[in-house]
Length: 415
Image (cartoon, rainbow, N blue to C red; front, side, top):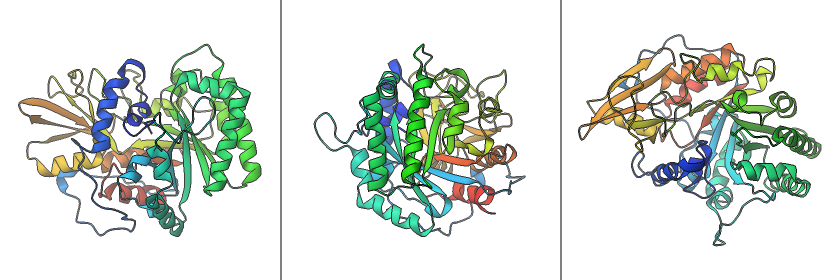
């Protein structure tokens, strides 16, 4: 979820902090401008279901089989402000919730509405745009709820925000005001804290959430309060008291992606269901929550993107060339497969995710991404573990391809 301003946000959401922010910000620039991996989205305001041509056989890494069609689950879509700004197609009929992403909250509890030059931020202007109003209008027709996300990705700022009573009071009042003024159905808290610390973050975070939830529910009975958590932080970080958080909020969205990132030394799946040698994976993340969080409150976040690297060989999980990692949206991968004849597609049965190789100017390229089969594998996880549903990061990354939504509708939304 991601920049404080339009360029830097993607780097921050992907949990790449400190020395690597500069590198990821460069990658974010490419995404924000759709310069390398995605051409400008030309469709503006496409909300209804479309009739589509059969999915090209080449797009599948292997035949789809054992489709899951079971208990209806919640489907959540994160709508980044840059997707609103760029007129991305949105399909509310496939979702139960759309979360507008998002508004930055600073350490003093203020919502950031202007930048350092006193210009209105794209975050704020997109939320107040005619485009977003149109999306909300269409969502109302499909009974799709609209939430807004409040975000911060700085450990120091989060600590000050939740530990200072004045800042906490100001933050809660700001959230309540936006919820009421814009008639949102709920709020999503995205305070991403991923570094070990001696500061008693969990205690202050519990206090902050307790007050927030109590006051929101007092004003709006059916308000939805959800919270995002990094998929490895839930078992490798002491900043989160997941038991208490599970008691307080309605939904916990586990960001089940970025297990490999642009800076990874080896290429690999972005959202692996399982990995060998006890490496991080969706299964390990979910296992860590057993007995701590009710399964029906867990929403599994899955990506509509992958990562592309220049690699030293065509082998699975080859070593990467430093500085070459970049985002490859679902749209980018589909177009690459459709327009090139030298793409070699493979599927890893353990991680249950596809990957491909191709050559560019004599250089070896690898992309680890998501397709219909891997999405169906994650739907199987949601169903077998009796989770509350699935969340997609992020709306707009699929372009005008609606095949992912068809898979999700069949696996999660159909009763």
